[in-house]
Image (cartoon, rainbow, N blue to C red; front, side):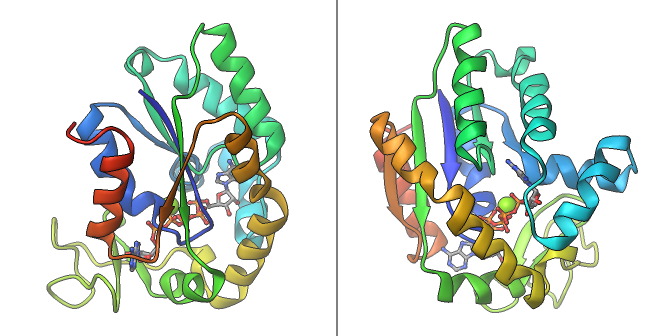
Length: 216
Ligand code: AP5
Ligand code: MG
């Protein structure tokens, strides 16, 4: 199964991804996570992406497309994959179709998690994540058991550099201009599934499960 997660920053893509990837036994590929990993390791790609990410802007298409192509041709993607945060422009979506065509395959579903912008700001500015295992929390909506410590490994939680209020507004703006057209793109391809992302995380997970074919 090849699935794409669409939705604005803070919609809950990362929150839902693990459950879907585990259920279908497919790798979860988050371009944001891949860039953050490259940044942490100070790779040339990370250095190129840094200024765009810090400003809340999109990294140029050519850098992202190459990164994703290198990842989805690997053996562990033979049975499918879950893309989180890619594609984010129509050019990226067209490139993905071409890559899949070369591989003799296509996307099965684009899950569009819809959340209005006034809710997004609260979600993003309250997000905290574990630098060790990547688990994500929210200070109000999904707090860790012990204040600011990861439930899974006890590490101190951190705030993402681009989650400060001033950058969040730019990210939402960029989404509206550059990524929102993908909702129509996948609608026209007949692959889009719309999910109400304002429900609780458990309800969103249940709605996605139902839409992707019930019991997995
Ligand atoms: P990326 O890491 O993809 O960030 P994003 O799209 O801004 O998405 P987020 O990770 O902020 O949101 P999410 O939907 O995953 O929400 P989450 O589940 O964490 O990209 C970062 C940057 O990398 C980009 O700005 C760009 O520079 C670059 N980049 C990446 N991909 C690119 C591409 N393809 N092209 C170009 N550049 C690219 O949830 C958010 C919070 O809400 C959490 O605290 C969570 O606990 C809480 N929450 C989740 N669900 C619910 C719920 N149902 N109810 C209440 N709270 C909830
Ligand atoms: Mg995410």
